[in-house]
Length: 286
Figure (tube, rainbow, N blue to C red):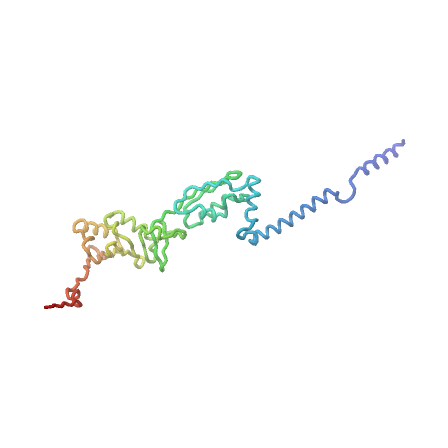
């Protein structure tokens, strides 16, 4: 066979082995299946975002968790430490995580930021341990006092931060402070009262006056007006007077300590005898 004929024969065999023009059946099937999957995913995403699958009793609500569990990515092991006044459900609801729910796409850094944005959380650590474990460590703000403002009551910590989820009625033993700015100045007042424990044990409430000074309310109905400057010195003078004369146990109505080196004591009003008997009638039978 001539060389030219041999070249044409081999070229014809080469081109005959090439695939036919246009996509193969397999390629068309994969493309169509991918398009259908993308369409279904878009519809499902829209339904989830719109809340159409999240109603009470919905059989779809637990579906993501069930799928994640089958793949080993469900929240099957959640360990929470550090809670004192709050319930685990409160914390998990803030994160949008439920036991057995999906952890696919869970971001530990974002979860920590969400927790530390809560007014009752001082600090938090969130650790995702693959595949299905979640460790959460929380440090709660400690209740310090109850702040009354505009008829509402708030539990505050030592910095004055209000903790909206705590019920003040459950912490009635805390000092009640009232007035504008009282939440910010409460820690300083309590520190001064700690130096005079015999006075502190009688104090049930304190009112901030003009954001400058305090008026104390004692458990026996007495009021004590503290000065704007050096209230700690005034409290110590009151404690000394109580040690020497038991003034806090003598039914005094009020004590004014606002003037330097001076103490004004107001006694309760005396009740006239005739006020007690003016409506009393005596009859005598013979």
